[in-house]
Length: 112
Length: 113
Image (cartoon, rainbow over the protein chains, first blue to last red):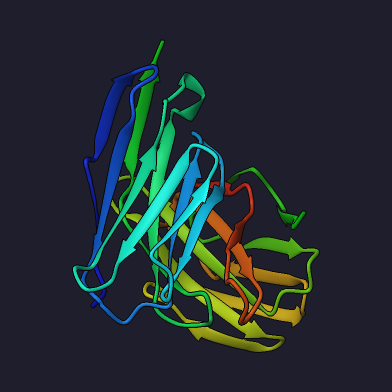
């Protein structure tokens, strides 16, 4: 059974720091890897999607990488801001249907 | 922009009631999903549908059923609500093929008393 693990479970940093969120998965058969952001009580917003043929994706201050051989993905956030405070979830997509297996998330707090 | 709407943000029902949660998308996406999210357990897939009248069980289908009569609408049905079905329910949609980016609705917080 596919398992997705995110480390750390929670992270608190001062504004301006660069930070890395980690995601590991057990199933090397991967279609894509997605990173989402969730604000309290809200739905999920897609941040970055990495296809299995890609190594990384970038959007603004966010960069996500994928290493299929080691079963890992990282989300790098540059120059963090208080508005980045949220829960970040990674999800393993094993098929083209879009079915995802989610990690438990990392709760990020960026304080001024 | 893709828009995914869910019929209610908050819902309170009593044990034994039949509950309908509705999800509507406006982008003609083929695939739609229902998840529930619980503290410590994360998001878990209940059911998904890849076409009208087609459905597949996810990881935790027990106690739930679904209906997809029209492409844009995917309904989750709790046949006889129980307290352990108190949860946040999230609907998502994705077009088949392509990038497979998933778009989520705002969620329905269901409380079963």
